[in-house]
Amino acid sequence: MGWIGDSIESIRSMQIRQFLTQAVSLGMIVTSALIIWKGLMCITGSESPVVVVLSGSMEPGFKRGDILFLHMSKDPIRAGEIVVFNVDGREIPIVHRVIKVHERQDGEVDVLTKGDNNYGDDRLLYAQGQLWLQRHHIMGRAVGFLPYVGWVTIIMTEKPIIKYILIGALGLLVITSKD
Image 1 (spheres, rainbow, N blue to C red):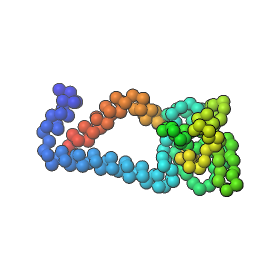
Image 2 (cartoon, helix red, strand yellow):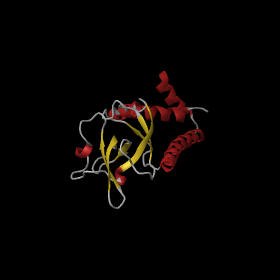
Image 3 (cartoon, rainbow, N blue to C red):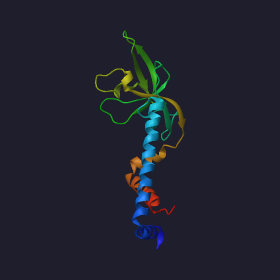
Image 4 (tube, rainbow, N blue to C red):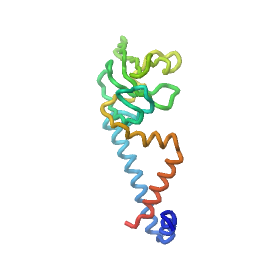
């Protein structure tokens, strides 16, 4: 009958109480993941403590598919640091290196960024008329990375059907497990 047929038969033979127990277990797994994410946000001070490099603009240092771990401290941002930032009007954060720091008279710091593999600075990526990034644009500084692990995220984003199949299979597995 196959794996899918066996799974459907397993669901049919379940009692309501067992089904509810499995559904609650699935809910607890999802809730635990969200709690861990929120905890990481508090510990790192970053709104997104883990990001995936989506382009080759930081090669050879970081390649597409690398996962970066971010931390946002109160220390001033310095030239040479790798930061992840959001630009007004763009949804996807950008990972680039700080190439210039401009200290204003009020003590705040503005930064200019550039991808290691790009020819020019990022002013063309910034919002129209914006020449510098302010602190509120910066999501965090890269403090570590895992090579290639982010490819899972890239594949699921570029091919959504794979994401739905994987989520469905995992959900079915959790619901039909007899433990």
